[in-house]
Image (cartoon, rainbow, N blue to C red; front, side):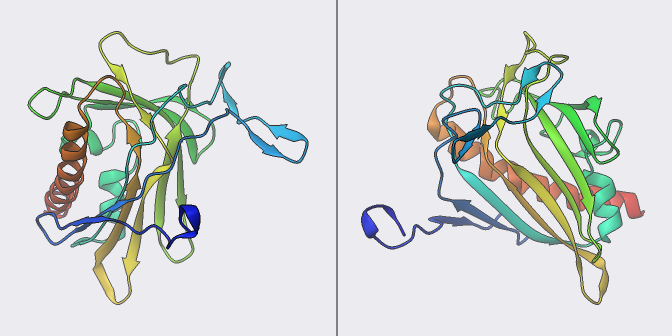
Length: 228
């Protein structure tokens, strides 16, 4: 129920980017107020990576949550090859919002701590950013492939002077096979990002919809190149 016993809050803005993809702006939620969860009388702190606790920055704004969904004309394997978060992968070559991607610590075969840098954007109003996340990759029995991430702090990756440190709330991409269509992939993406720094809200609200529309459009071009 909504606050005060009213009706449940619903997504309040829909945009259809070029290419027929659906972009949904979901209601925001407040950020965590403590770097741990409370259950009964016991407090469970989050995992530590290196020597620094994985906590959100104090006073961080939650920002809007976005969900993008569309069908990419390529197999899940090809789509995954383009988006999978690995060092030396294809993502930095086609995604205009990814300048570089590096693995800070490989925790296991499927979990790693990574640093992503982004170039300046929005006519240079948004300066270069960096994000440090713990990333999970997983494949399910039905062939769905998942990349999920959330912000973490790491002793081996302090903030860099030439970048503004941004913050990712839980986010990810699902590459979902389309039954009966081996050359089609349903791609579901969701994210909630605090860009950090001091940006006008109008700039932030304009940047993200355009950014995710460009993501789907450029990904479609990238898989066509991969198949050629």
